[in-house]
Length: 284
Length: 284
Image (spheres, rainbow over the protein chains, first blue to last red):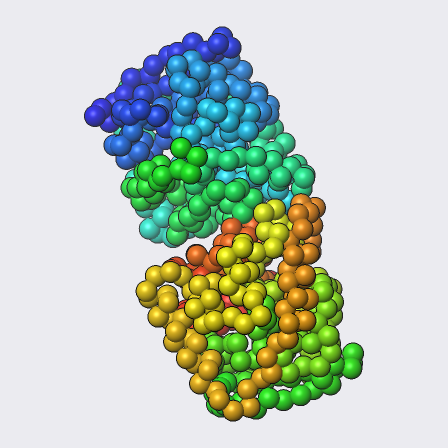
């Protein structure tokens, strides 16, 4: 299997006119489509995580409309981002996919499951929160200060994605090393316009709206909810909340880890995802 | 320290005219008041759990109004049960207490924290659920069938309070043995009227009311939420939901355990409670 760090950047044309940049890893019947975090592009996935996930299935990573190497414009709200993600999946000729959404990607994944339920086989929500949950409007000053600037430094990234312990920071350095091991044919950087639009969407998602929590009752797919115990960007309490509101959720909180828990614990997380996807489903 | 199984049944007169039966274990400044499960009386606490809890503090177990050896009438709703619990705590001359509510007792504990916040120092909710949560109206037929009959057999009790594994069932047998080791001066059995009133209150608590979930945002005390992973009476997802709705909650789900997880894992649970109560509080 070609490692993620050596996969070519491919392009597919969506029905919405967007040229989507993507990478196609592994092999399997139902692919796992992964939705990236705030400001992330194809190079922001830890290659070790994608390689672990792709050991047992096909994994499709892509830039959503306007992000990184994809054409088009990044919308200012999660709902339109979900339509853009659905358009990518349609462009790939897929009628059903497992979806792993990470951070803002987990908001988009929820919305995809609500807008186009038939498309979503199983759902994995990493560092997630429900729309409208009290207390999550925008990010803490130190978080958006660290990762929301025009140019972010590795130490800023580490302060949000990894816990303060030496072990977690060391894991963060190693993850960064893997992400930057690819020196040729890297993805295009995400633009400032994308950063602004994505943060608009994050803030809109966090406008307090208790009634919006009921939306989750409409998601009938099995869902695996996961976060790090020290995530400063999206607090673990929102993972509990979402697992409690969903009708068929399992939850795991990874120790001594923050927003990048799935990079830090890539082997364990990928094994948990494989176990989750292998479970017999009531509705099948 | 006198073991719980040898403590005398005491009586105190509440301001509401109720004569409360109680037992007073251990010693300490802020007592831990424990609120019992559906149909339980003073003998329904596993003595090993109370002894573990009382190793580091004073623990007060009591029968609420109309229950077991207490006089008065069991009300048909959680709010009135909370007022009756507040009256017991007032009768004991206490202005502040840590409260551990278990099952229906955890519903009452939430209500006490909402009605009389100054009284509640820290809150422990065991096998709990928020008022109005979707999907929890009444108990599953096999659950209320097992523990809601006029006379319940030990095997019915075990089927709800312990998981199906041999290890959990063995722990259940041992817990029952400890509960029945006291042969003299046992508490009075709970009546059928109490059983009916308590189940009315449980069903009312479970009437779907999404807006009622917001009530939990008003609980500002630190809360420790705990359940067994296989509780058939109050599903673990409601522990996640409540931990996500509270502003200052920690959560633990105990493995291979059901409604009686705190009896099965009495030493571990008591140690977790001690750690939780020893934590420095932001508001102190």
